[in-house]
Length: 135
Ligand code: HEC
Image: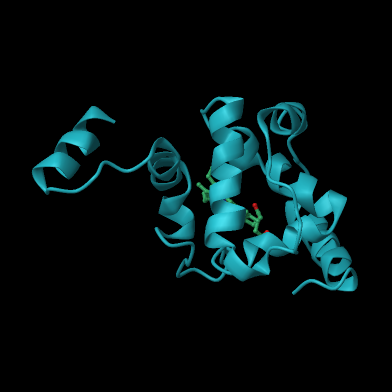
């Protein structure tokens, strides 16, 4: 944190907000700094992540993904991180009127991380999201 603030100051830029730093630290290595990743096995978040908010299970799925549920950040920062990914990177893919995540919702869901056959569960969630009219 201190180092990145110092680098930003030296470069004459504003330091990145904590949520952006957390994304780069815990997520960007796989998903890419702008939510687009090279390997096909890692889903694109840019203009896509928001569609999961089309269904309740889709909304819950995002918090329960092990890489998200177990990220070493507080409930508050995790809620910010999800909002950054969904409403920021996800852009136009977010259904109209979808509420933002908050610490209370995230705190309960991250205690139930998904474990078995994540790929199968993801396909089910995506089918439900499409049936509900999103992406
Ligand atoms: C080790 C690589 C890796 C890291 C680190 C990682 N993810 Fe992922 N992410 C994946 C993969 C792979 C999937 C697809 C589901 C699965 O198989 O886990 C995924 C799924 C997702 C999804 C749902 C998109 C979809 O189409 O299913 C979101 C949103 C997401 N990750 C956000 C994050 C955030 C936020 C972080 C940081 C806290 C993070 N990821 C860290 C690899 C990663």
